[in-house]
Length: 279
Ligand code: PAF
Image 1 (cartoon, rainbow, N blue to C red):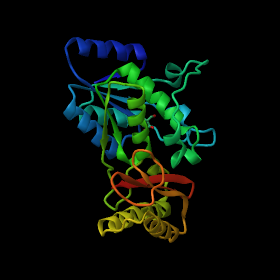
Image 2 (cartoon, rainbow, N blue to C red):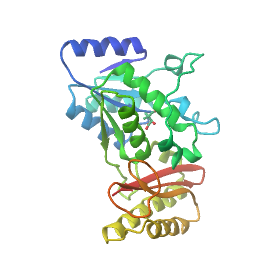
Image 3 (cartoon, protein in one colour):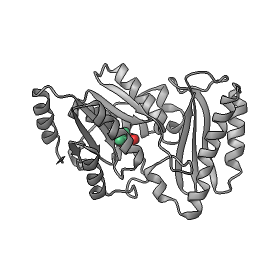
Image 4 (cartoon, rainbow, N blue to C red):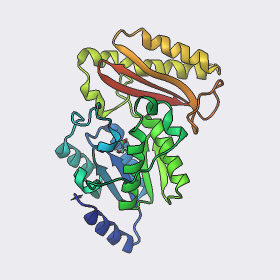
């Protein structure tokens, strides 16, 4: 497995693979890899001749008040995991390699990025779209892999690829959960013992909403109210949002029908966690 730190190194390697007629999959990550990332990498290894994983904590998707500096990093552990899983190349650039000092070109999106996480994180998806576009230009993958846990991000990237005619297949992979239900996230590491227990309220409210849908409930307001009530029963939890939206447009719906997305963001102490289910 190769570790590349520069755009030039990645381009040279991908060019060599292309000459051999090999397909390339990309798994973009911010590192501190967990089983959720591992499931994306495994799928990419299955689908492609060569796999690139990027490990880059992208500064432009964090607001100044957010956790850019504190975001967990462990390159040694990540490299070992990538090697075990069959990654061919890790792209691990410094921020200066990705952003020139006078960088000023952005990929931004209307509508889809203004709801849900976009409300409390107004610059987040501009940073995500920009860095993902850059990675797509650098790696030129046939396929790119993203987790369903970041459902809005996945919908936004699909839309960006469609709107900008990028010739890349976007593969969404299911949420991976801890045994007790908590969705895997690099940010789970911020939780102390008491908060880790309290964080279960997210998956419990997701499972409750899912059960209501399975039992035939289609009234979005009723499902939302039940999920809100469940989360509010946990004293350490503070709701950012609980929304039931159309899975493509991210706009609120009254009636649950496919594809509907029920998405939540909840603070447990200072840690903001997200979870969702899709109908
Ligand atoms: O989901 C993430 O880890 C990040 O948002 C991504 C897609 C790697 C872009 O920085």
